Structures are given as C-alpha cells and as structure tokens.
Length: 274
Image 1: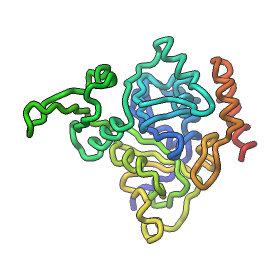
Image 2: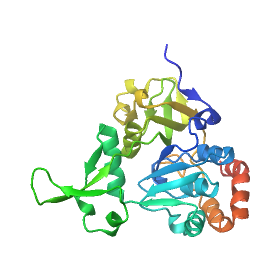
Image 3: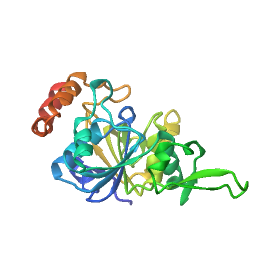
Image 4: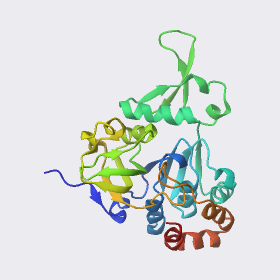
C-alpha cells in the first residue's frame, strides 16, 4: 500500500526547508495561512518565493519573519487595506532581492516547468522596462522568421507548491474547484503541499460531479487538516476575508514589534474569528 499523504501542519511544513523555491497563489485562490504561520515561527530562511502571480498577506508574513531572500512577483499588496509594510521596509533596507515580473510571465514560466521545457517564448515583454531589469530573460530571433524578435523566459520549477483548499480525500486527491492556477503550480513543482478544511473517506475521483475539478494524488505530496486554514484571508464559498483582522494587521505591521505581536496572537484571533 502507498504511504498515506495525510499529516499534521508541522509535518507538512517540515517539507519546506531553507533555500527552497516556494510557489504560492494569489489571495483569492486558496492561501495556506495556517501553514505560513508555522513556517514563520519555525524560522525557515533563504526562500525564493514565487507569487502566482501576486501575493499579499502571505508574502508579508514570510518577509516579516525573515524567511524570504528572493521574491519573484508582479505585485505585493494588501489591496484595499493599504500597502504591505514589511515588504516595503525590506525593499528599502536592501534585505530582500526582488525579481520584478508580470502576471503572464509568471504563468508562462510555470507552464514551461509543467511541460518540462527549459524556456518559453513570450512576445508581450518586448520593449518593456521589466524586460530591461531581468537579465535572465533574453531576446532572440524567431528561428522560423529571421528578424522577428521574441522574448524567452527560463522555466519556473518550484521545489514546493503550497496552497489551501476546501476538501481532500484520504487517498491524496484534492478538490480545487475552479482554481486552475493551483493545478498549474502543482504540475510545475517537484512537491505539492495542501492544507484543507475537510478530509473525506470518499474517493473524489470517483465522484462524477467533482472529478473534473480534482487535483489527482499523483501531484500531491502531503495534506494536512487545517480548519479555517486560510484565515484571515477568505476561502471561496466557505468564509469571507476577516476585514477587522486585516485592518489590524495593516496598522500593527508598520513596526517590527507590532508585526511580532500580531503573529504571536494569531491563534487567539483565529479562534475568535471562527
């Protein structure tokens, strides 16, 4: 019998070690915030964080905890709750290396990783300042039409993809609903870690109504039960974002002491919200 992918939060987070490339989804696509807190408290260091294609609170927490060396993203923002204070401070003091990207470029790089390609072309970058600031992106001649320039980007092949979902089964299949970018992340990454609200004994791939929106177990390394595991962010059809908590974070995280206090009080705040 294959080994069960089911574990606890600490066992899941233990897969992520110093220096890894970690892919995470945007705030609305299922963010594993409970696992993020475990990583921050454990003191992981030197991560290359790939935001698919943007991030907000998750990147903020990891940056504030000193876990991130490099971030590859098209944006880091708290949206309507304001700028991301730990991200901004890290940029100003030079402690964070940023690889400026675009949404199409992040997706394209992951698609190359998904398909096992060394690189992928993307025409829309030609003439942009983003291209000028990425020496790892090249402009070459189209081999089929001499004189026709095309940008090429290296594949993005994360060591780990991490996200949160509503449901998984004990066989390792994960119901991802309409969030196709987490499917892309999982297929591009070497390992995939998923926290979930619920685990069922039923095989999700045998459910005709759900099977088309299931990430098969072949792409999943570990699964951990984490109820309300996206808090204070929301999860589609389960619970909304906690606006009070995000407003509090945006205010407290302006200082390092306030940031540390928010992270320390996380369990109590989450229990109160649930």
